[in-house]
Length: 338
Image (cartoon, rainbow, N blue to C red; front, side, top):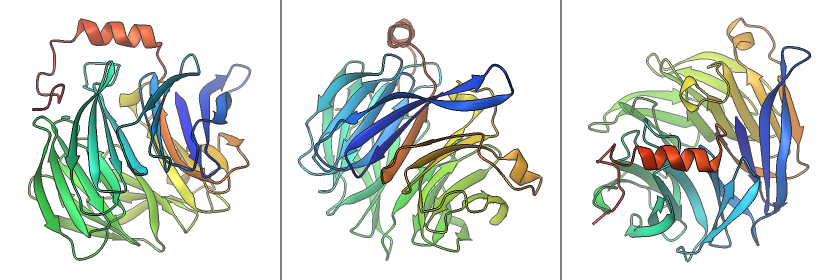
């Protein structure tokens, strides 16, 4: 399992989560650290052996995680890259597409093998705060400063739905099964049906929510200005458990390590990053038992972290071979939008 964290100081950090052979514990081994952008890093994404970071310098930088090497940059945006998301078909280990959003309201769709720009779509009139790709790879949701929610048809490469929310949403995420999506506005997170956007329940958080990640069994993990990591039961709308004072400052990124993303065969691990510069890995079973949770591993970057992404590590050549060998599968993926 690898983790990638970006910072206001334009540095990118890569870590590998490895078990310690002498005892049953984990450690975060540094993979790389360097100033990959000319200004602050605002977003990050990772899938298989590939990671990407988006910056206020209007560029996307790409990384090969196993070799800790740079793969170059993408220059299609003319404004700050505010959100990134990979789409990986269930049968593949290498991502099929990269979807990016910027501060002028545009979304770019890239073929990830190789990285070729396919389409640019105007999704919002103002800055896009966040985007989420449906597990099918056919659709994406985005929210922006124009107080709107947008649905994008990634197969055809166009906007298919646009509605006003009445207030600005800062974050949107799909559940692991794609049947629901979660949308955060300040200290509230709405749980919506994916089919018709109907509001099912609303989660009332103590402070502003800055990051979220879906987990298994209907859980949603949130972090923010309260410095805690909270696991919500989205069916009941109640708190399942909470890691209190997970960091000394705001929690800016959460990655849930599930069975689906390989690397560590334990669905009870999650990673978090804070603006205090610390990345931590947790075993949430201690919190489920109402015990004080202690991080299993941590690393300090001495920087103001802004985002966190995670992926299982496989060699780039192996992943590409798997991808090429299954190229006839998943015909509905947005390989070539019209």
